[in-house]
Every structure is written in C-alpha cells, then in structure tokens.
Image (cartoon, rainbow, N blue to C red; front, side, top):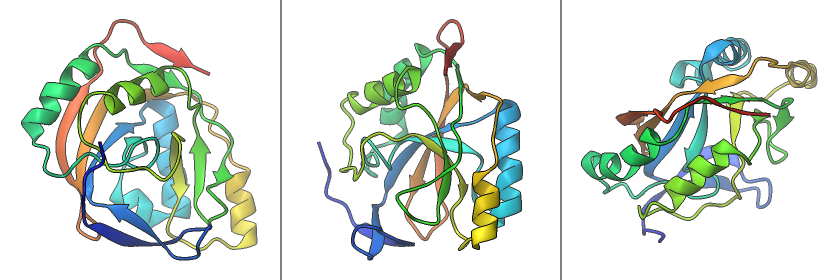
Amino acid sequence: MPFDSDELYDDRENPETGRPWRRAAGIFVLAELGGAAGERIAEIQRRYDPKLAASSTPHVTLVGSSGVGPIAPSTSAEELRGVLGPIAESTAPMSLALGAPMRFMQTEIVVLPLSPHGPLRTLHERIAGSGLRFDRARFSFSPHATLSFYPTLTPARRRELLSLRVAEPATVNRLTLYYTADPQPRVKLLELALRGGGAVASG
C-alpha cells in the first residue's frame, strides 16, 4: 500500500504539465548492468553525460520509478533482507538484450529500453508483491538504462547519441538497494546476489 512521504523536486520538467518532476524520498532497488554492455554504457555516459557517469554505475531501476514507487524510507535493512533475500536467492542471473536508444517521454533524457516482459518483469512483480510498503508510481513498468540525463543536447549531439547501439547483452547478477533523498547523495543499504540456478536470457 502507498505510504505518506515528503516529496522532493528534481530539475527535470514533466512533459505533461511543464512542472518539475516530483520524486518521493525512499528506497530504490537497482539491477546493476555488468559485462561488456555495462562497460559500453559507462563509456557512453562518460562521453555524453559525465555528471551521470560520476554519480552512478549503469543500471536498471526495478523499484522506485515505474511499476511501483520507492519502498517506504522507514523500512530497515534487516526487514529488506528478510523479505527480498529469499527472492534474490531463488532468482537466476540474467542476460538481457538492450533496445535502440530513445528519448524518454519527449524529454532530453536518452535511454536504452529493455523488454518489460520475461525474467525482469517476474523479478519486479515478485518484489512488488512482497508485502513491503511502496509509494505510488507515475508510470507502468518501463525498464531502461539511462545514457544521458543532465545535459541539454544539441540536435547534432542528440542524433549522434540516438544512432548508437549496444549489441552485447547486459548481465544482471545482483540487486542493490539505495536510500535516496534528493539532493543528498544516495546511501547504499544492501546488496543481494541472484543465486537461482541457471542464467536466464531475455531477448
């Protein structure tokens, strides 16, 4: 069920209202992207958005921005481990295909989409149905890896970025949980390895 939380503004405009996004403080669940694809995404971020590259590693947000909102900030690390640990233990590592770059919701943000179906959705839904308390989400589940967030891109720079491709599949072998309360730096709370048998590929 949703929780009541203080909401904080970030510096991006909502394309539907023209007002800044509102984002609740809370706990986000990230699936960090490894392998050659993770390295390639990090390289692209350093080239097009050094601020983004310096602030985080390539990842997909499983919980916090779409499908369900952040986990209630009062949730303890012990409770998170108790609820999410068994889910991670029974989930196999994944190899995930990345789509062509696209602009997110008519903003200047450029992302690589991943399929919202298959093992990634199963993992998302298991967490969403775990009994933890979540804030509301604005969007349906739309997993993606962000390539450029902060800069305003020139038309030439945008075309160049949108023409790039990451052909290698991205590997996901752990979940990382962060407490986020902008504009403060995020705080890492927990890391859970995916230990289910057999890697799962998703095209």
